[in-house]
Length: 289
Image 1 (tube, rainbow, N blue to C red):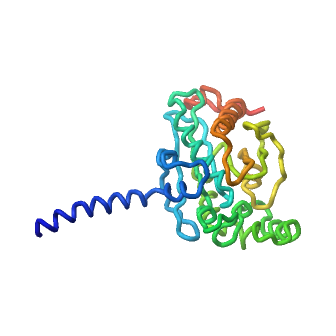
Image 2: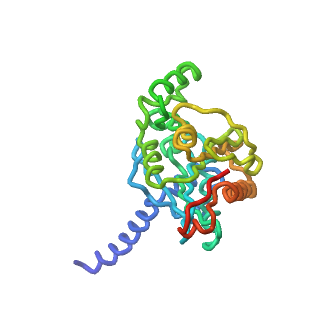
Image 3: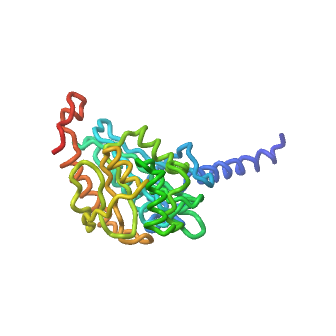
């Protein structure tokens, strides 16, 4: 091998490695599309790839934030609807806040973040609510009587709105199957689903709901066939807090994002936190009121 070849091949190899490293994260796409998301915020989120791919082959990314002694498991999901860009952005901001919690905080929480469940919808030429098959992922979960109710609701209540098509069958989509499987694997004790743009707080589940998160007040909007709130909160009995941000294309101010986070932590501490002895595995938690 000639010295000239070695001299040129080494810089080329370094360049290719650097390009590969950048390609191994979603941050270029996220920063280009999501509001109020800078490169540093995305890179510091340390998102990890899952083996699951969207309809168009895009990776679904996750991030776990877990202290040494976590007593609660919380699943946070953004961008189930691809045109609700602010929901993915807020999830990334919350990853930063979760990572800043003291490791020895009395309320040990294992967070699992899925900031962008519907990457095809978010990253399409024009962001769209549905996935690449045209399915509303938030109508594709296997609620009881889905085959009967989802079709009737779509035809009668939405007048066959293509943005709300529930799909040909429950869990027909790789993205909804991923979240369904994730719920089975992770067994969350709380699900937080971030949406936009109605500016309210919705809730499904057996526990008393939070009255407000930041400037968002509780205003339960109903139960829909195939929705995550119906499946998780009603059918499975896992509390589902659904946050409807006021704007799909713009996040709240950073201070408001933080206030929603603090209000969520406060409500969790009051309604979901196990007793201290349960946190170290010595007893079962008391029944919630």
